[in-house]
Image (cartoon, rainbow, N blue to C red; front, side):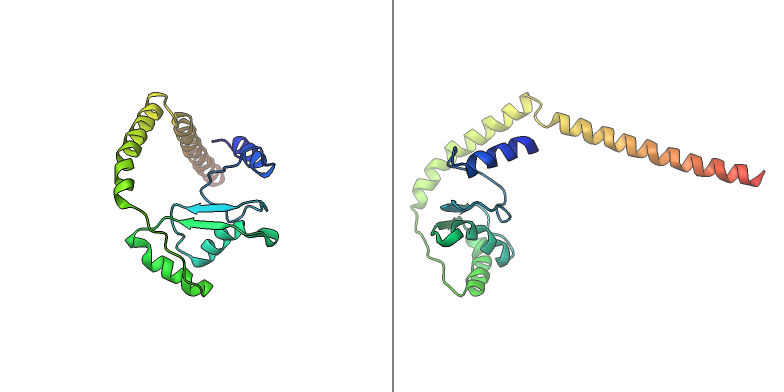
Length: 156
């Protein structure tokens, strides 16, 4: 997604034109009307977690933070609980229901990945990266040649 598209989506979310914003990190966003933050991954630093979930409690408003955790995240959760001096509430789920949906999610991910591959998604980024690398290599080589030429001229 381009920067322009991200800013456009953020603007629509702030204006409450759209009600859901999916973002990789919301710690730096100042949006007073956020009611729910879902953490698909727990930040390694408790301060980052506090900033993320703090999006739900702006200007005296309340909100909910839901964190999806696995057994590998327990130490991170304990670190956060120690930092905020509060125990997080566990929300029990039916694991069998989740496993039933997992197949559908896996198929959807595979279809999406094939579509991205078929449409050369990301190809422009790779082309730009190669051009930039070639330009930098050429630029560095030219700079070295200029220095070598200056050395030769000074010797004469």
